[in-house]
Length: 214
Image (cartoon, one colour):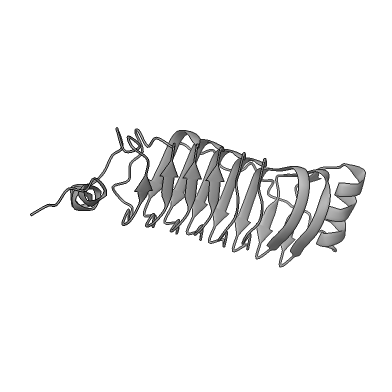
């Protein structure tokens, strides 16, 4: 799968006061473009729209956003904390998350396109009624995460912990699960039809179907 990388400028401006820069963009309806945010705490924002374009975030913490139209395009996130952040209705296009904490984050009705999550904590994250297109989850912790009524196209999972995650009304046809831990995975009937699994996972899957393997 060819995930498009964020289109980032080689030269990014670093705002002297990141929090004030975000507040100003919200009040003036401006986009935040080609900026480098480092060690910033971005919290408590409310407004009609907020768009980040071509930005890089390093060791930033995000919390308590109440923005009706929140979007990130061509952005990279490294060692950031999004725990329990509500991405509801958010648009994320050409974004990379590396070694981030996103435990309990909600992606309800969000749209993710050309997105990559690597070595990221997504336990208890909620993906409900969202649209996923060209999405890769690599070595991520998705234990107890919930995928409900998700529409996806070209979804890649490798080296992920999917134990006790639930896939409700989310077919996995064509998705390769062979490199993931699927212990205790919860599925609706028929969700696994057409999925790719490894021979060593057959016993786990048999237990889901109530079959006893001697």
